Length: 210
Ligand code: URA
Image (cartoon, rainbow, N blue to C red; front, side):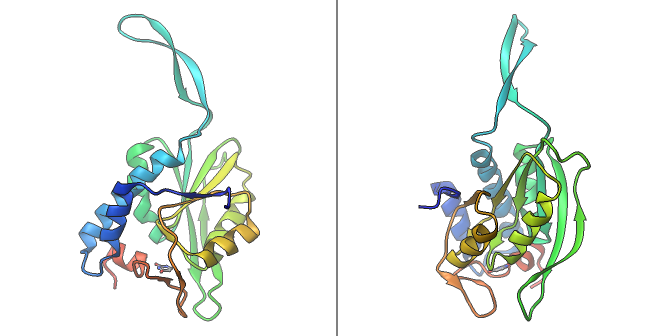
C-alpha cells in the first residue's frame, strides 16, 4: 500500500461523487456537489495540521486554547477545473490564501504547458493544498507541484475527486513524498487521457461549456 495515497472512503462523499458521475446531472448540481465534497475533503486534509496553544479569554475565564499553528494555508488551484473545489475548501478554511496555476494539456503529447502562475509572496512556512478534480495522466499535477516546490512551502498535499492507477504512478514517480487525497481510484485512462468510468470533462461540467 502506498503510504502517500489517502483514499477518503466516506459514505457521504461516495454518494455525492456518484451523483457527479451521472451524465444527466445538471451544471448547477454538479457545481454544488463539487463544493460539498471539497468541504468534506478539507476536513480530512487538515486532520494532522499542527496546532499551538494560545491564551484566550472566554466570557468566564482565561484558558489555553488550541489553534492552527503557522501561516495561513494556500489553496493552489490548477486552472480551470481546480476552481470548482475552491469554494467548498474556503467554506471550511475561510482565511486561506488562494494561488492559481494555469496549465493546458498539449492535445498531441498530453504534456502540461504553463501559461499562468500566481502565489502569495511569502510561501516559506505555508502549507499548500493543490486542487485539481481529476488526476488523470498526472502530467499537469506533477508539473504544478514541480513549480510550487521552487517556492519552498512548508508542505504540499494534492487533492482530487477522482484518479486512476496511471495518474498516481506518474505523479508519485516525480513526487513520491507528496500525499494524494482522493475519494476514488477508477479503472484507468482512455485513449484521449480521460479517466474511465470517470465523470467526463470536469471543467466543462463545472462551467457548462460542454
Ligand atoms: N480531465 C477531466 O476533466 N476529465 C478526465 O477524465 C481527465 C482529465
